[in-house]
Amino acid sequence: MREAASTQTSRQVAPSPPQQPIPFSHKMHAGNLQLQCKGCHPNPDPGEMMRIAPPSTCMACHSAIKTDSPAVQKLAAFAKEDREIRWARVYEIPAYVYFSHRAHSESGNTCAECHGQVAEREQLYREGDITMGGCMNCHREKKASLDCSYCHEPR
Image (cartoon, rainbow, N blue to C red):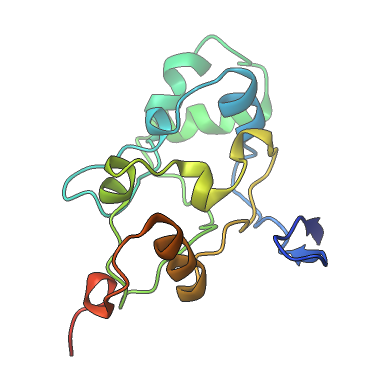
């Protein structure tokens, strides 16, 4: 487990990164190469979820870059067979919560506000607080709605 800086005076232990089917460095792609999040994470209608690009998107670069890498060769096999890679989820919002990545993005929020400093991470782990308390704190800071029905369907 890693230590993550906390907004409190003590330090918290962050969860270990989940094992992924293919190694992927966000530090290299988002950090060093400065690729934008939305290039690999499209947001199709209606905009609730960000997706992970198919292997064919990765191969736009990797058909010529690091082709001798076993990880890229595995990626190429997925692309050739038009198969989806089953990435391990780092963040998952409960089904009873309405959340729109598009609405949050369009209102000026950045990916880092919820997902942490992804561009500095070789492997991702749950860094941002996506609990109800974390969301409520952010809504208070940004003066967004605190009404229950804003994120939860009325029962």
